[in-house]
Image (cartoon, rainbow, N blue to C red; front, side, top):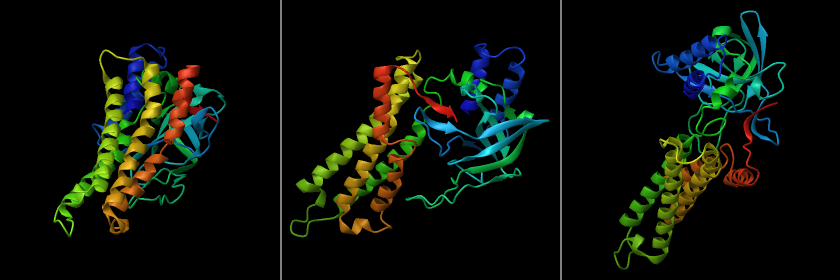
Length: 322
């Protein structure tokens, strides 16, 4: 949705000239109407396996202008709903431009000639997924489905209250949801299971209570990080600068993942040997929440980025052009 709303906000701010404005408005409305009025599934494809020192995500997928549209060539390493979504929203770089103004957005039909999945994404903890990425080989995109104006993507992103690519609190708290489920299951087990000699709940034991307290603390800490991120992003008027929102998010994402994973570890300890069976919610949570530790970047990378922002005061380009 941000690909549409941010572009419209940039239009209101006068960031596009009279020639560009109608094209930007038409594309932004197409994105929003596709998801809203037309109820179509629009998947996002930005991530690539290519990395650079100065950018978390480097875009090497290229878009070349041809009669009536564009030809896209490249490989997206990760994206949701490959072969399932109705259309793909693909970030690519305009051929011949070497800086960030090359970044542009294109709408690709799911069954477009030249598209295919990249790999079978058989990640740990996943039972059903369609996140195998996307390969584009001379995929034609009509002009009406392209925002091929140099600098349009970057100008639109200036309207964000957060980083260059936006923050994704909803994605992070998916892992926290897994931690909540593991916590609730472990607490129920500690209440229902009894000591054979006293008949008291196992959860009354000092060892078990220490673990339960640890789970509770980690869960609440993850929740506080998420709530603070939402607060500083959505407050009106803004309570902190955009730079501070970005710094906080760099650390926040990893902290939510780390604290959620610690809950899963503690829940497994509560369950004991029987909890390690693959069918239990404890081993399930451990596998699921491990994905949070590597999704985009680990907590260590987030803290490093935050420290760099604190000292150097410059945000890295989350999207770079390779």
